[in-house]
Length: 130
Image (cartoon, rainbow, N blue to C red; front, side):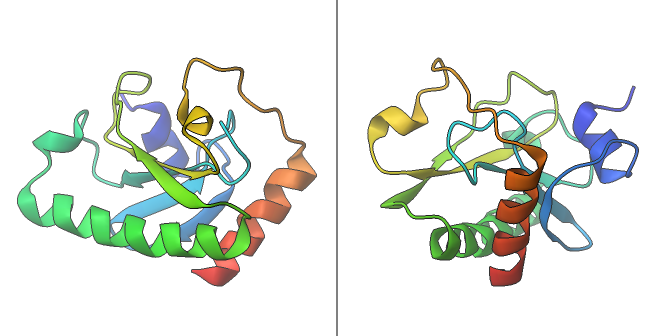
C-alpha cells in the first residue's frame, strides 16, 4: 500500500513543493514546528532512511543540503536543524527545521497552523532560492 508520501510524490495529494529532481522531493510539513519546516523524501518508497542503498542515502543528503541552504536564505533563523525520526510516516524522510533555539526542535510541542497563503508564500520563496 502506498504511503502518504508516495501519494504526494505521485501527485495524488497536493503539497507545498520547494524542490524536486528525478530522485527526491522536498515539500513543506503541513504541521510545521516552525515556518519553513521542510521534509525531504526519496521518490523510491522505503520505510527507513538507513535501509536506503549507499548511493541513494548520500544523494539524499546532498539534495537536503541544497534545500537547507535555500531555507536558510529565506527564513530568518540561526541554523537549520535536522531530524530523522521515521515513526510518523513509514517512508524515509529528513526534517529540515529553521531554528533559533533547541526548543524549536521539540516534536512534542504544539505545531504551528499556517494559512494556505502563508504556506504558498514560504514554499515559493524557498523554491526560488534552491
